[in-house]
Image (cartoon, rainbow, N blue to C red; front, top):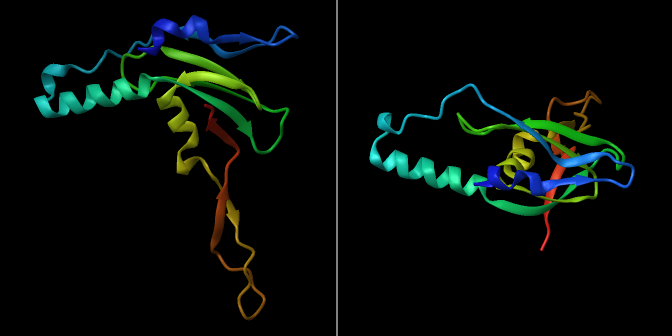
Length: 140
C-alpha cells in the first residue's frame, strides 16, 4: 500500500517549499469490518482498495493559473490515514491512483454558461461544457 512509501514522495522546491506529500495523521474511523461483508463484496472491496493505492506518475495542471497551488487532505476508505498534499502546477508527482481519479472526476468540472440566446435574445438556461480547474495528466 502507498502509505509505506509516503516519505519518499515528498519534494522540496529550490525556495524550500514542500510539495507533493506533506504529512499524515491518524484516522479515528475504524477500518470496515470484513465480517459484515459477504465473500463477493469483500473481494471487490479489497481489489478496489488495492487499485486505488497503486502509485502512478502524473503531472499536475492548474488550468486557471500556473502560479496557483492545490492543497488538500485525502483519505478514501475508512481507517486510512489522512494524508495532506500540496501540488504546484507543471510539476510531476508519484501519487495514489485513487487521488488522481478523485481530482479528475467529471463532477469536479466547473459549470460554464453556454451563452446561447433564444429567438427573443434571452439567454437560455443550458450549460455548456464544464471546464476543469485542476487536472492530473499521466506521464510515461
